[in-house]
Amino acid sequence: MRMALNLARKGLGKTLPNPMVGAVVVKNKKIVGRGYHKRYGESHAEINALMKAGKNASGATLYVNLEPCCFYGNTPPCTEAIMKAGIKKVVCAAYDPNPKVKGRGIKKLMEGKIEVEVGVLEKEAKRLNEIYFKFRKKKLPFVILFLNLSLDGKMVPSEPFYDDSDFQKFLKRLYLEVNGILVNSMQSEYLFNLLRKEKYRLFVFDKKRDNTINTLHNLIENNIFCLLVTGGKEVNTYFLKNKLVDKIYSFFSPDILGKGENPFGDLGIFEVSDCVCLEEVKLQEYNSGFLLSGYPLWRR
Image (cartoon, rainbow, N blue to C red; front, side):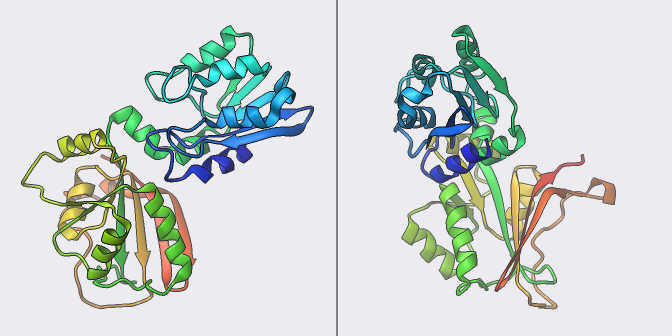
């Protein structure tokens, strides 16, 4: 299953609105086929793995990180191909939240006398496709808040990682996930040049103009599945206070400013026990500083 997850990651930034999926066919304890969903509209991971396996798929076990589809879309149902290939067992990490699937794929396989096991590395599988799970379940984009801070927690006006090649690689991976960026009206020339060069869809924050939840729903309708919020204090505060943030990246440069603007204003928190904390926290060191990431845990 870990191999299936690693294969799925190869589709990063190319599969939405489909999920990233990898599949591995195993027979007699040997891998006889593997594949992943390379791009939206193209064949699914299961089909690619079965094609590689060929006749060896008969009597084999298929490992896949998401429930196989069971309906006609851009491609035929994977469940039909799995049954036709003679697969005897399917091990899948998680159910597909797509209303057109949502357990129906598993049911189809079981009706076809195929043994099915669900839940292997489920947490990892859901994290891998966290953007997909968010918009399928809530019809809202996955919101990432990116902060650029000094060591003493002040907002840094210019990017300290221009020449940090390792951090630039991280940013490129992050931007593969993102297809919309929300800023305030005061952004660095560096950021605007980057957005213009990469042709991201850019949105300027205006909390007075529209209901934000309605705006986020509209983004999904316009195929914006992951929104990167990288504005100023007002933007950060509004999104965090209204519990609109799904994930936070906070880059700290090794500089102490002593003065400057805080990243957040009044969040309406009066007790330490009510504070917003992060879970699944990770810390990554780079030449130009370190990156802290995690998922907000709302305590009230």
